[in-house]
Image 1: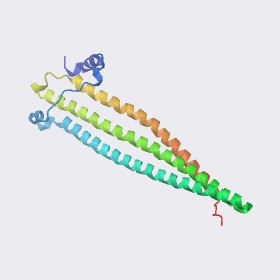
Image 2: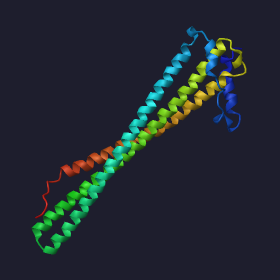
Image 3: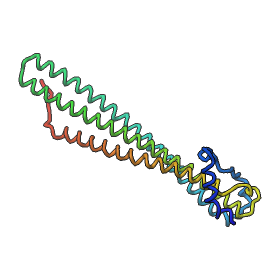
Image 4: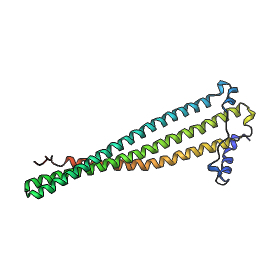
Amino acid sequence: MNRWATFGVAIVGMALVGGCSHTHQAPTIKEEWLARVPPAKMAPVDDARAAQRTAMNEANRADAALTDAKNQTKVAKSERDTAESRVSTAEAEVKAAKDTGNAERLQKAQGLHDHAKAGKSAADAKVNYAEASEKAASTRKDIAEARVRTREAELKMAEYQVLEQNGDTRVNKMHPAEFEAEVQRRRADEAKLRDKLAKEEQQVADARKKWNDARQNIASQPAQQPTG
C-alpha cells in the first residue's frame, strides 16, 4: 500500500502514544537534499516557501499593529491623568465656592465638577477600550506567528513529498504521518488562538460602545465656563 495512503492510520497511532504526540517534531529535511530535485518537480516546495514568506510578512505587520496599539494605550492613560487632574481642580473650586456662600458661583462650580467627572468617565472608558484593543492586537500577533510555524511545517511536508517522489533514499525511514501530524498540531494551535481572539474582539466592541456612550454623555451636557 502507498505510504501516503496509510498516513491517516499512522496519525491515529501516534496520537495514542502517551503525551509525546504534543512535543514530537517531524524529521529534519536538509536544504541541500533538494539540490538534486529537477526544477520542474519543485513547484510544491516553491509554493510552500511563498506561503511562508507571506506569513512572515503578516507577522511583521501584526507586530507593528501591536506597537501602535500599545502607543494608543499610553496616550489614553495620559488623557486619563489629565482628566483626573481636572476633577481635582473642580472639586477644589466647589469647596471654595461653598466657603464664599455665593449660590451662583457654587452652581457654576458644581456644573464644572459634573462635567469634569463625565470627562473622567469617558477617559476611563477610553483606557478600557485601548487596553482591550491592545490585548486583541497581541493575540493577532500570536496568531500570525503561529501561522508562520504552520507554514514551516507545511514546507517541511512539501519538501519530504518531493524528495520521496524523486526517490531520495535519505527519506526512506521517514513517514508521511509524522509531517502531517506536525501540520495538524500547528493548525490546531492557530484555531485555539482564533477562538481566543473572537472573545477578545467582542470585548473590544463592548468597550468601544461604552466609550462612545461616555462621549455622548459629555456632548449632551451644556458648555460650562470657569467661575470668576
